[in-house]
Picture 1: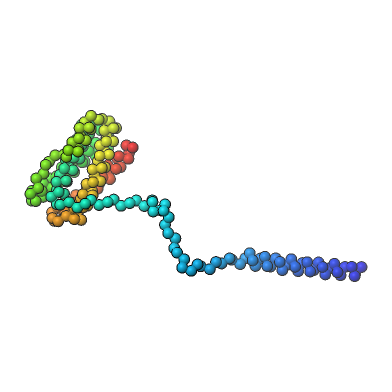
Picture 2: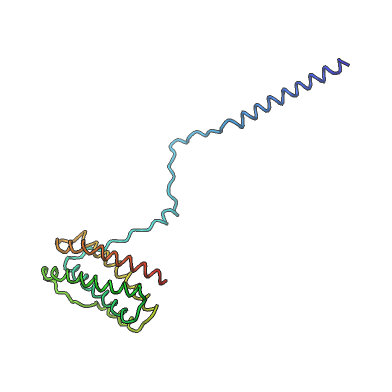
Length: 206
């Protein structure tokens, strides 16, 4: 009976030993972290085309104009905006548009008073009126009313002030006369405020 048990016992011990060594090998393989050597001359990640497309392109600067041309354009621009604002005020606009139009008239009247002696000093004769393009816009607005009129007005204010901001920035950067550059630097923040307000009001009417 003992002779039968001994071979069986030995076989069992051998099997246990084999399993134990297998588990250790498996554990060693699992616990040891896999390491990959860094690639030589690796290249840092580059922004994708999507990231590049999301970046807003910078606005193209306005071509430089002479100081006399700047003065003339500012005078016309002020009368353009005041003229359209006066039309809107005759049409019983909403409170927000009324407040904006009133501010346009007040601020551009003040700027015009400051521009007049500068123009005189440089021998620039001011026309004191709207340009032909805005006279046509004015005639169209006279036939409009309500939300359509207000939308037309605010859209035009965005367009005009975008151009005016670029004009003032160009004069500050490229102007030759100290007084015109000083006027542009002093007035630009007000023009930028008008532009921002126009864009805010216009979005509310979309």
